[in-house]
Amino acid sequence: MVPGDSAGPGPAIAVRGLRKSYDGRTDAVAGIDLEVPRGEVFALLGPNGAGKTTTVEILEGFRKRTAGEVSVLGIDLAHGGRRLRERIGIVLQECGIDPYLTVIEAVRMHALRYPTSRPADELVELVGLADQRRQRVKTLSGGQQRRLDLALGLVGDPELLFLDEPTTGFDPSARRASWEVVRNLCSLGKTVLLTTHYMDEAQAIASHVAVMALGRIVAQGPPDTLAGRDHLATAIRCPLPAGVLPDGGGLPGLDLPVTVEAGTVTVEVPEGEDVARALHRLTGWAVDGGHDLAGLTVSRPTLEDVYLRLTGTVPELTPGETAEGDRP
Ligand code: ADP
Image (cartoon, rainbow, N blue to C red; front, side):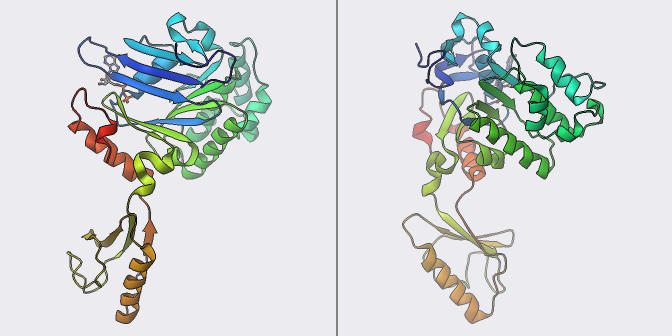
């Protein structure tokens, strides 16, 4: 048995050795382990074809696994997903809502499917559609429709919410508003399993992420420390100053790796080296030479940098090799 009893404090999702083969020969999901604590936003990341949808559909109780143990809200899915349906919410990319209903009518109609539901007014407020409550669904903007989808996913007051690419097609302010809604859900004790292609989204709202590629999990952990991100080199970047050559010739001696690409100089300061010292030399050189270095930045690798490294290395994995052994 995987941990977590139905009512108790165990993880919202516990998966061990999950495997799914559609054709009996290749594995779409090739033996993954996952644990999603209750009350957290967990993001499942990975390129197309990585196995995210297959995994999520198994967790939702819509698809049968080939092998492995799966427990969702303490329910072992081998014994049927019906009991689970009432306790989870699912927000897909496209929900078929009658476009002639008003927002509040759509939420009330949807509530009829559940034995208990949250008040429609409260939900509309929660997703930021209070001003549109009497507006017909067909007149909502794309971002507003997705927020209505979210309200519908929450109607049955689920303990666990599955969100599929929740902000695809949103404008920047609508994205931020939706992130706030998802964060609020966690403060209400809900668990959210999110799939997204946006690394800034995962960074902004997920407390844990798992990166999948070719049916495996290649890294798992908090976004800030994923795959040793917090120990990777710090990058000092600035526009190419006049007189600096593509090999960095002309810059002061920094004893650090320097690259010039697309008009930008990047100096990599590995962990253990002194960022302040490198900056001091560079800026001292710039002051002496009259270079203003406008646009200079100092940054750690982003989640996207780490993600690209992880997913870029995966084709070199061979069957039986552990993903951990292949981490950078
Ligand atoms: P993702 O969601 O990460 O894009 P999927 O779970 O959709 O990945 O797909 C993983 C692999 O399983 C892919 O190679 C895909 O072609 C295959 N696959 C997905 N669904 C089916 C299906 N219904 N029948 C056969 N193969 C499938």
